[in-house]
Structure formats: C-alpha cells, structure tokens
Length: 511
Ligand code: HEM
Image (tube, rainbow, N blue to C red; front, side, top):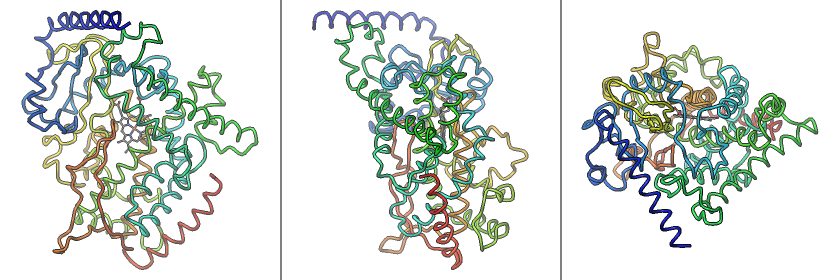
C-alpha cells in the first residue's frame, strides 16, 4: 500500500508542479509578488499573525499583490477602491469562495454557506439568510436585543472581570433567538460547547497546508485509504447531529404550537419552494449561530477598549446621550437617529480594530485583467480589511480612535462605513443584526456607566494593548484586559436593576 501511495503522491506533486509552470508562463502580468515569503516571515517574526505578515508587504508591493499557495494564486487587495472595483462591480465573477476540500467538502458536507462556491445552492442559502436578516427583517429582533442588553449591563456592573462571558452570552442569545426562536439564559447547555467545537473544527480545517487541499486528486483514492479525512468525517458527523437536533427541536415546538417565529419556522414553511433537503436546511439555519457569536462579542470587546482608550470621545457621546435621552430611562432604538455622534463613535469602533481582518477570501470564476494585471480564473482574492481600514489616505492617523472622521455623514461614501462587513454579493449576511446589537449595547453602556481602566501600583492607568490580538481563525479579539465599572449617576444604577429585573420576566417567553 505504501508504494502505491508514494507513487500516487509523486504523480500528484509532478502534476501540480507542471500546472504551476504553465501558470507561471503568464506571471509577468500577475500582480507583484514577494521575492521570498520566508524572509518576510523572518522579519515580522515567525509567530506574527497572517494579517501582520500581509500588511508588512504593502509598502514593498503596493495596493495589490499576489503569491502562490500551492498551485493557487492568491491576490491580496489593500485598497478599498480596488476591492470595490473587483469584488463589488465585477461581482458576477468575484463572488465565489476558494475550493476548501477539507473545511467545506468534508467537514461541512458541502453545506456551510460561508464557504460555499457561488451558484444555485449558495443563492438558495443566501435567500434564507436575507429573508431572516435583511434590514427590514432585523427590525423584528430589536425588542429581544434590547431586553438582553439590560442583562448584559447588570452583569458588567456586578462582575466586570467576567466581561467575556457576559458579552458571549448576549451574542449567543441574540443569534439563537433569531435562528431558532429560543434564548440562552446561561452558557451551560452543551449545545453551546458543541457549537463552539463545530466552529473550531471548521477553522482548524481551514488552515492552509493540509494534504487534500494541496492535492485534491487524493479524493480519488479508495475511501479506506483517505487517511486525511478521518478527523474531518468525525467533525462533520458532530456538526450534522447538532444542527439537525436544533432543527428537530423547532419542529417539535411547531407541532405543539409553542414555537416562536424565527428563521427556522420560516425556513420549514418555505422548504418545499426552496428545494432544500432537511440537512441543507439544518446547515443553512446554523449560519447565524456559527458566524454571529464571536464577531459580535469581539466587536463589543473592542468597543470597551475604545471606551478605555478615548475618554474625550466618551464624554462627547455621553453629553449627547444626556441631551437626547435624559437620565431617567435607558436609550432605545427610537433614539438612534437623534444620536449622530454616537453613530460616528460606533462606526469608528468597527474601523479602529476590525474583528475579521482578512474578511473571508473570495474566488474568481473567470480570467480577468485589472489595471494591466492578469487575474486568472480560480485565483483566491483576499480583501485585506486590516490594511484597508488603516489606510492613512482614507483614514489619517489610522491608529487614533477618532469618531469625528465619520462626523460628516452627508458627504461620506456610504460604502466606507460598511467596509468592515465585506464586499459585494458575499457581504456579511448578518450586518443589520450586528449593527443593532452593537448600537443598543454601546449606547446603554455609555449612558449608564463610567468604564475606567484599573491602575498599577504607581497609580498609572493600565490600558488594553491593542497590538495584542488573539486570532480565532477568521476572527480575532483583544487579549484579556481589566477595567472598572461605576454607575455614572445614582439613577443609572436604579434604572439598570429595574430594567434587568423586568427583562428577566419578559424573556421567559423565549425559554
Ligand atoms: C460586527 C460583527 C460582524 C462583522 C464585522 C462581520 C463581518 C463579516 C465579513 C467581513 C464577512 C465576509 C464578507 C465577504 O466575504 O466579503 C462576513 C460574512 C458573513 N457574516 Fe458577518 N460579521 C459580523 C457579524 C455577523 C452576524 C451577527 C451574523 C449572523 C447573525 C453574521 C453572518 C455572516 C454570514 C452568514 C456571512 C457569510 C456570507 C456569505 O458567504 O455569503 N455576521 N461577515
């Protein structure tokens, strides 16, 4: 067996090398590429995250560059204008995803929409997401988000050290209610661990370099010899049983008339016209649960960091809240249009330290030429949000947290504010849900609390180190930090406790 395997492998390596040579005959027109990746990695440090490595190349190689990963050309876009030109305006050919044999075809059974190639199956999947989470549909979730936010406030007030838990609980409960019409009162239920595990399995399988993504022809080996898929098959079985279980639970509640309207109830009612099998539907409905927790909670962590780093902006936002809302009630969604400074403050949170630094890679489905550069069919295209959102031409002094840069909303290109949510037809499907969550939580934290840094023994404030970000695969979040929380005025405490107690009663309907 080992000789057959060695020969097969040898043949694959030869074919890949030959394909690469053919492609390289056209390299004079490819976007510029680094001489040696090894040298760059050595310069920025072997443990540097991918977004730092790619960012370090922009000065040498410019706004668009390329490199090979195996036999696939990877094109990196560092300027928003180029990303809009390609990923948005030429969306008919730039909206697919790179082929991920292990992560998509094996671990996701070909049914996770995030990594699904552009085509009919993806359009149906996306229709389910858009019906459930369009700007209009998302308004239906405001009430639940507002109620959950009061419990988050109470948690932060009593126990700021456990901020990661309370933020994750808020984000989890919001997406669980949207997808499955039920809430999370704590994170003890094993479904949350299983969901996090499914996310980790997917991210893990996504790490470049596994044999079957390098040599997909290995899939032609007899199944029993496909050693590379054993863990992947187990991961798929785990994800499948979780998502099917969640959907079956909704079916049971529909049968007893106790199901709240949610994406799952709508999906089940429309299943025939959608033409999705039970399993495809189960995977589609898991998308908010899979993509909406880490992104939302990490953005809220960054919001707390911004509050700690930028007391002058916080004061301005609080003055506006006092003027518009007063001091005897929490801000609501109805206040949002009257809070322009807060709006800029939140837009700057997304920009200051983006949580999805390299977006999700797109893939191009036809040969293309851009500014004289040849971009071949099948190339992976990375919209490098990390670098774009720190572009000093677009955002002078990009490391400074400065909401004023978004103050003149009238003259702003609306695409700029939405940039952190990605591009064109594949832009974030949960953007409106996320924006509602971030607005209500940030508005209420700023209204209710003074959030301040803890101090060292010399009385100097200890601020979160924004260069210390933990990668969680596609997303990232700040390393743990500490802060204190005090009610901003005596009534704030009373309002928070009262609203949280009421919310707890009202939320029982979601349990
Ligand atoms: C502040 C929080 C969030 C940020 C910054 C964010 C950002 C992104 C980005 C950059 C992409 C890739 C876009 C592209 O390929 O060009 C994406 C995709 C996606 N996001 Fe979000 N996201 C957030 C929250 C959410 C939430 C709350 C949900 C669901 C409830 C969600 C669901 C999705 C889905 C399903 C996709 C895949 C879209 C597709 O492939 O067609 N996201 N998001």
